[in-house]
View 1 (cartoon, rainbow, N blue to C red):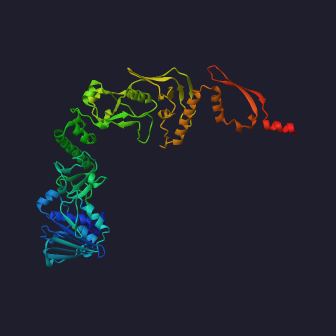
View 2: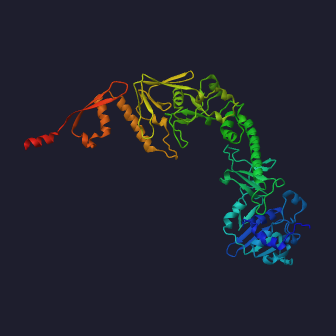
Length: 543
C-alpha cells in the first residue's frame, strides 16, 4: 500500500478564511500588489456606510485575469518573483472579506461573486465601459471599522504615495523621507545621529509593511527597510518575519555596526570634547566605548561632587551628590590635582568612606562607564574596597539608641577620626555611622546620622517616614540629655517622658534616687515619705 499527500480543494478554499488573523490584511495585500505592479500612486476610498472599498493604482495592470483566482501561483514575472518571493495569495483575501469583487484593468473587467468563486464557479471577463490605466479593485460589503485611523499606521513606511479618501498619507518612515544609510540587510535610519539622542526602539519594514515594532513614539525610533531577497514574512498576514528571533538578533547586530560607522565619521569631524559630549550615551548603549580609549576628553556624566551629608536613600534618589558641571582634564587627573574615587551608594558599611571622601573634596567617578583599559582607570581609587578604621576621639559616653526602627550604639565624643589607607580625617561637626555604631562629635546636634544607619524602607519598598522622624528626634533628645551639664534638668527631662503621674501608686510619694558611679550605670531608689498635697492639709485643719 502506498500513500501520498492529497489536498481537499473544497476544504482548503473554505477554511483559508480563518488563516487571516487581521481583517486589515486585506489592505496590505492590495497595497503590496499595487507596488509590485510598479504603481507610482495608489488611491483608496472607503465608505463605512455602504461598506464599499475601492483601491486604484497606476501600475502595469493585469494582462491575465485568471491570475486573480489562481491560488499559490504568484503570477509575477521572474524578476519580481526572485526579488520578493510572492506567495500567490494576495487577492484571495478579497474573496473572504467581500461579497462581490469588481476588477477593472485597461479595457477589461470582471465581476466576481465571492461565494460562487469559492465553490469554483467561472466568471466572464468582459469589456469595461471605461478605460483604467493600471488596476481598480472595488469590493462590496467590506467591514473595516476605524479604517481611517489605521491607514496612517498601515502606510507609515510604504514606498509608494497613498491617497486615502482624498487625503495624501504622510508616510514619515518611508525610506525616501529619511536620511538612510545602506547596510548588508537593507537601508537603515539611525535616530540620534545629529544630536546623540539615540534609542534601541526600532521599526522594521519588509516590502514597505511593518514586520517588527518596538514601543515608543515613531519620531524616536530606528527604521530598517529590509532587503526582500534575504528576508521573508510569515504567511498569511505578513506582519512578522520568519525565524523572527534569529532575524531580530541579526538586525540588532547590523544596527550596532551602522552606529560604529557613524561614530567613526563623527570622531574625525568633531573636537574630542564635542564628540564625547554628544555621543558618549550612544557609545555606552551600543557597545562602542573603545572609541574613547585614545581620547583625552572624558564624559561629564561620570563625575559627581559630594554636595550634602551622605545618607542612605531609596527610589534612585541621591540628593547628597550632584553631577559635575565639567569633566576634569587629563592633566589635572594625572598630576593629582583632582582625585577620583569609586564608591557604591551609601550604606552602614561605607558611610565612613563617604565622609572621608567629602572631607577630602574627592570627585566620585563611575569607573564602569569606561572600558577597563581606558587611561583614566589607572587614576581611580577604589575606595569601596579599602579597609576603613573609625575611632572616637575623647570618648565621653556610649549608649544604645532605642529607636522605633533602628537600635544602634551611640558614642558621644569630641571628634571622629576616619582612616583609609594613608588618608586620615578628623570630623567634628557631622555624625558618622560605621558598622551599626553612630559616632557623634561635638558639633553634631541634627539627628541626621540615623539616615546613615538606615534608608527607612521596609521589605515592601515602603518609605517609613514616621519612623524616620521618630528615630531622628530620639537621637536629638538623647544627644541633648547626654551633653547636659545640669543634673536636675537631665533627670527632670527623663522623668517627663515616663509620665509618672499616670501611675496611682506613685502619686504623692517622695523618693531619693541615687545614680551609681560604677561602670554598670545602675541606680537605686528609696521611698522617703508620703507627701500630702497642701490643699488636703488645709481642709483637715479647718474641720
